[in-house]
Length: 129
Image (cartoon, rainbow, N blue to C red; front, side, top):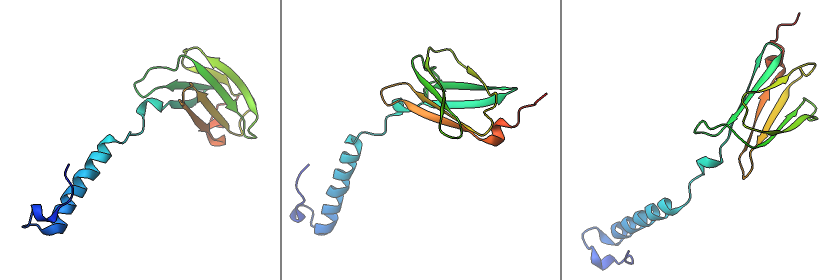
């Protein structure tokens, strides 16, 4: 790229030539900047079926998390369960008395982490006998 020189393009004038160079430079910089890494996204999903929570954790390409840590916290932010993941999905967690809300956190390492919130309304849809 050459410097912005008004004498090179007298038809557009100094401003037109400089704007063209500036937009070319802006485009070049935008293409060279790193974009957010899709690889660091993690999809965590939890649903309620009968009296259990079904939890899945996967990467955007559909690959299940094979290693990492699962933490389930209750409505008071107390850790109920912390366990290592082995790739088995879905993870099944009995609701028991935890009907005031849950936070499901998954950390697959290297910046791959996400969470899912189950509200009291989600947890109270369970048919009780």
